[in-house]
Image 1 (spheres, protein in one colour):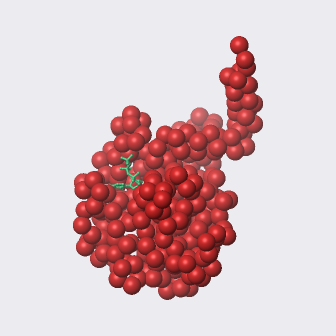
Image 2: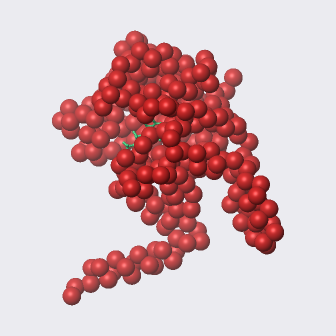
Image 3: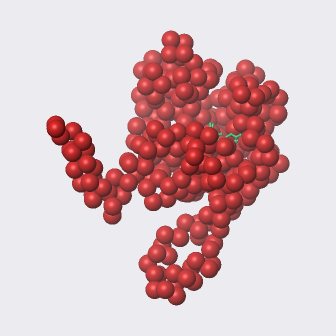
Length: 308
Ligand code: UTP
């Protein structure tokens, strides 16, 4: 049976985006015209996912409301002659089923995934972080390619990786690819699949085995849940998904990496620097508002650089 269940953890506190996230989820922040999590769900749907299982927490009910069908709003738009806006609500009608469970204490990403186990059962699952968009306007079928590779190779896990600057490896989980595995070489070409020998969380630049960083999308056999249950709390008392993946590798599991091509970058909405950049990029690409924004920025930046 094709994999069609995606776990989307959205229970984190989002402290790096305070005060914006004090009373609203970071996953609902807009990037261009849509909230982050809508892009995530649209991307998953276009990759064949049919069941979306959100792991939510305190203050996250607006995510559930966003994916409900809002009958009252629809009739208000009809009655007030704003029918053209109904297409903005089209996403509500996608052929998807939504499920919600709670992470009652924010004990880390690994713990959030573990909270999905009673609903996920013993089938393979996709995990997609609710605060990361893949590709401009979520134009990416990376998850479909990952599930295809997962099945073709009978892997235990397939993980998406992005290339980051060498000095930035200190912020990410970094791949140690098996040299000579599949098409991996010291200078990999884009889109390649490789065997993972290890995953190093936030290494020092000098110790990083590559500049390939975990990029918010995973496919797992259900064994991941047993490994998460055995994973002791790590940094900050949190149960880290990275630690469970390492355990999987140490126990002889076949864990593959799939490198994102440059055309399908990861937009991380977890910190202000990359959030601002993502917003500007999506807004500039907007067919209706992008051209005027481009003109505005040109004038604005021109004024800033004008000598006094
Ligand atoms: P982050 O690692 O960015 O953690 O989460 P965070 O707590 O949301 O943010 P900061 O570090 O306080 O700023 C990555 C994804 O995993 C989810 C988040 O909601 C986000 O979508 N997550 C994280 C959980 O669901 N539960 C957790 O305990 C931690």
